[in-house]
Length: 471
Image 1: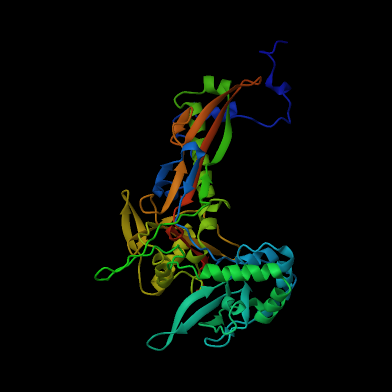
Image 2 (image 1 turned 180 degrees about the vertical axis):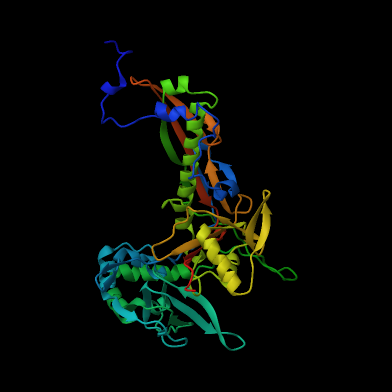
């Protein structure tokens, strides 16, 4: 029997299907029909709103003024039953220990941390009381309040998992708490006392030298953003001596390399040859494949641990809602942390929660026209849906706010165009050949990344409760 006349029944029954079957292909070749539909396709507002910058050479370097980064990150813990321990290396997120690398000393400090469980409503520290150590929040939420200029209590911030307070106590024996911290939920606190820190420091020369170096760095003049100060004289008269200055740059700026999403599209020659009327099978297969790659691209721009927006927001630009559900005050707090906010991004269910929070306050979100489409907005800034922002098991999610554009020192998308066999900007389709089973293969690739030019260009409101309350 010749190969041409071999029946299909003699092929290996367990072999996985590599391309579209003829039975499925006939659905596009008979009767009146629609083009293939795809439920995965979303509006992809992030890809539409990001200004795309050409990244020649596959990388983009973000040059900034020199900043004296003294550590303001989140601290992580490990839990063994009811016992919680701080990960020793995570203590370097404290300003005083940033850059300290002696693992043995860090382990000793971590072992000195004492655990304390607190209840909702409990006052953790009182404003004006002596600060006797640094407090690390392993789990739970607390509100930071102080006394206003005209009396009464004012809200300063909301602290949550990984935050800390009272760090000045480690380097200043006369330090006092400048805010009151009250627990909003039950949780767990770890405390490293000044006495324990001093005892470890006395026996660790490397730690003493590091603390002295930290003191020297903090005495360097800097602006409120932590950048090296540019000396300027103003308001003088006569022949006053003017200060000399220069603008210092970071010596090791961050470089963003383009990431890639790829797949191999396979089409049987029999399908490509026989079932192309009136719809071209190859074009329809490619169209749906490109849609899937674009969806994956947006997911990576949001969630990738290396360059994704949720993981690259500066810690000072991460806030917590005051009560859980998003309120107008929370949205204002997120909005006011940067100039020229261009857009909010939130999961559709989060947008519904925003509407409920506004309605509870007797407000209704504005609407703005965006490319001929009416979208909800707050203070004139559009609130755009993005189902790539994850929702946790506890029914919480995040709201992203960003300023965009290279000239605005905002968030930009990175790509490279004019690729070989380019199908769309930054996306190529390359013919890979035909195998012995008569299957045509195409390599479909898209290259992308996203860069945050300044820390205040991107902000995130975390742990936003989106589940509606009881009726």
